[in-house]
Image (cartoon, rainbow, N blue to C red; front, side, top):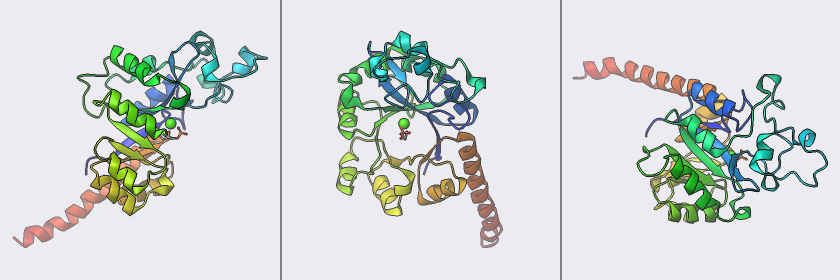
Length: 272
Ligand code: G3P
Ligand code: CA
């Protein structure tokens, strides 16, 4: 088993506004191995990083563009979205944070942490796989990319399979579910990870996923006790809003393993 990965959900989103550059940079400052983000497409075809299909919860769109009939991300241009404040809702210290483009997140991450990129509602954005390929390629994230740098996931498993066929060199993940056992077995040849809600994780699921040569990254876990349980069960990553806490829990687990080995050491030495 490799090191359990700390995956910062929407960045370090317990301490900074989710899916902003502030949350992304804080995530690697807090020890994240990967940063998870959500990607959607604007009216003019740009890829931006935002969770909800609409802008109201995480920006001041109602103040900047009052009276619009709808506030869908897909109904606004990039210039309009970039005019919004995506930080003040979280706290005054983050006033002026913007909804970042995917391009900007790739530049911010550059070698500091891996990226777990979730494509939201791909069925409502036909051709988004090709858009993603263009942006990743232009940013130098395809081709010679170091292993483990990028995983693309979606709750739309048909899309994940299509994306894999388009870009087989990019590891992909099936989010949610988890898929029924035959589908997990079927994904073994092409998927990198299975990423279910943490409450769905069982020893049998872990065995099945590992049996297929894949890894299991459950979401979203902020409780240290549950983090430890999942590590015991064999999870390969922890998707969390609190990467610093997860890094601490992992360090504690490693220390406990080491102490256990040290207790064994005099016995094995004596038995030689
Ligand atoms: O990566 C897992 C997680 O992001 C899925 O849920 O709704 O936060 O995108 P959500
Ligand atoms: Ca997500």
